Image (cartoon, rainbow, N blue to C red; front, side, top):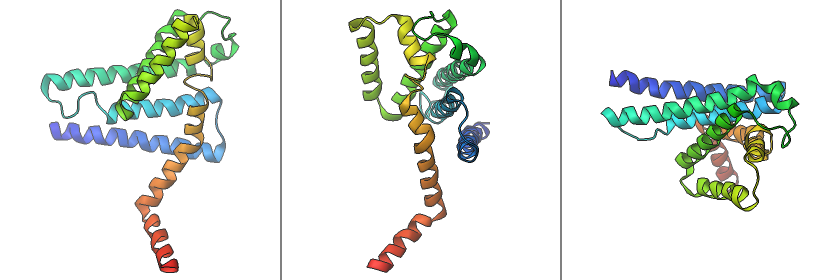
Length: 203
């Protein structure tokens, strides 16, 4: 049973990663969809893979594994629900007046959930430095500049200025393609061919 679960835990993220690669290759040939769909799908793929590949507790067993799996599952649900909500309510997101119309209660719940999920995913990948910096800037906006909670939520979740801003656009448009190309070159041995050719040509 443990062996079957281990194989499944490897196969599922691998299939999702292949789906992410296929999505971005499809975008290359057909063009990017509307910005929320495009950036949101890219972010969703990334969050799902993080919470599957980087569990809360590595090599945990028994009760600790149950706790770890529950936390990871909760973050998966939050990520899917918060981004899926933007897809379902796409017309509402486009038609509302940002920074003027008050967000709905569900906007606050899902928006805060997505912010926490992104911070946690970042912590699992690169450590505490970047999440702490992000939290410090959020605290600065709330306590020092005295932004209203609704304004901060608009900025971070309901517009393309926060989580769905330029850094995510660069990642979804350019970085992922460089990573795919680099992985292809590495796995096919083309990189070694280039190095050997350069050494043979120039010594």
